[in-house]
Length: 151
Image 1 (cartoon, rainbow, N blue to C red):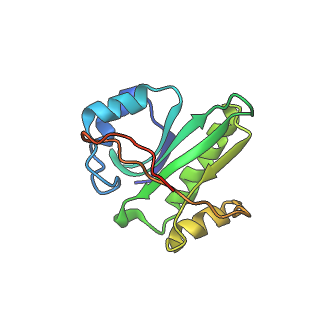
Image 2: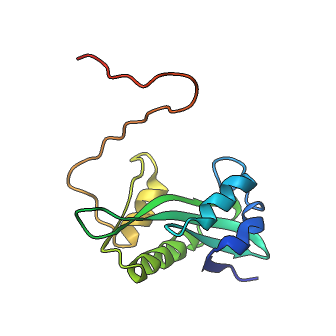
Image 3: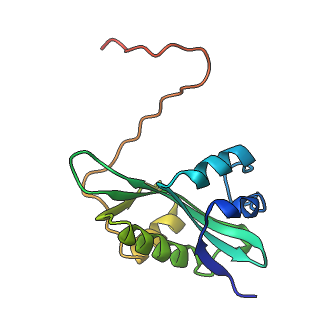
């Protein structure tokens, strides 16, 4: 059976539950519903015989001082379906979707030690940014207070 690539909507929540080997963690129903109901969150899926075998999550990101952008947050393809061009097809669809939304730019971050992702993005016409990005993380769980560190 052929793999279908399409944009998911709120009626597709049950389909996401079939994708345990695609996401980093097991999808949770309440988080799936929240994501799919947010009009700025977008999920492109690859579906094979009623099973979700790949996805791209993206956010229509608006700014007060510049045109909208599409932030591609995550790409995942089940190990059983890798190397078949599914990531490339999903990326093409999410970029087309971003264009329809009025986004003037799309961007994604990846690790240099992820050669498959580097090939995917470069092969789709992505251009590596001139300035390397640095990511900082802030843990917001637990009872810790948020404080400034002293230089």
